[in-house]
Image (cartoon, rainbow, N blue to C red; front, side):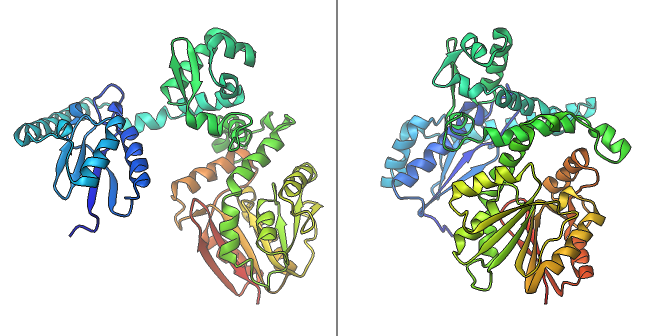
Length: 453
């Protein structure tokens, strides 16, 4: 059975640097070109495009197979894609110069490749060589630190439309030799390109890391650069059981970067959460946003319904930043701000929804129990408490991002952690909530919703 008229397979099996592979020969660019060309010809509903693992023909890559006829192409380049789509997909005429139809030779090469691979793996195992997966995990900090330093120095803005290492170094007030080394590493990571002595931003870098770009994420990502320093204290934090003091938070820009980072995470998720909770429902009139940060969730509620009124409670250092986000969103008449401490201050009463978005992981179990009890009292009958956070599995060993984020809270807070659905359910029912349910959203975090009858 063939549900699609054509099914295209492109090898994208990544291999160690220096080892022949389809990605090293440009298969990812071929994949992107195929997707764009199929979309342009309106064929995306007739043709299924799929990535696949190694086919054993690495020296002839990029390799591509077209079914149902089983036509094999080798050494395909992005410049060949238009012809393949027009002739083969459009007219049923394979591009002869790229077709590989020597079945015996193909089979022999694939079998030889498999045997060599298994022999090499067996030899590595006998020698006790560290597996690539572990080696990559251990060295994973290197590309991360390279990019974070580039963001801290605002390298991509300095590169602009093109510059050499001396020019970039002068703009960022850094050593020209060291700047050149960093620029070369960024080329190796695929974030810059180099021609002669001049460097240019890739499309991704120009879009996401250059000041003035509509989709610039640099300011928000500087929060990640800040917490990098906290992660370097993980060993001592595990020994002591809590965070180790750092001077990073004393810098005046720390809080602004933190809120920008939260805005980056929240702006796309907020409408999804609002939709899941039925914000357009006329019964939702008053919303309390505890620790609202950039106000992204309150803003989303306000935009979903002109009848909704939101109140954001946050600390004095954050509220002025929140006010600016609210003003820019044009919802100042629907969203009010209150300075306070959610661990101490009264929440008020009569709210239809109380939100804790990415908040509970900052606090200990005892603190969360207290917040949930007081949130219950702040709700009107049939009101809902909504916790959005990373939710751990019952044994707390996954999902991976939630488990790692729990360590992020260890190095950044006195008693914070990621928690499981069972823990949130227990806390809410102990506070008096009659019904508790989980609502899964796309992405790494989910909702746990408690209903006050």
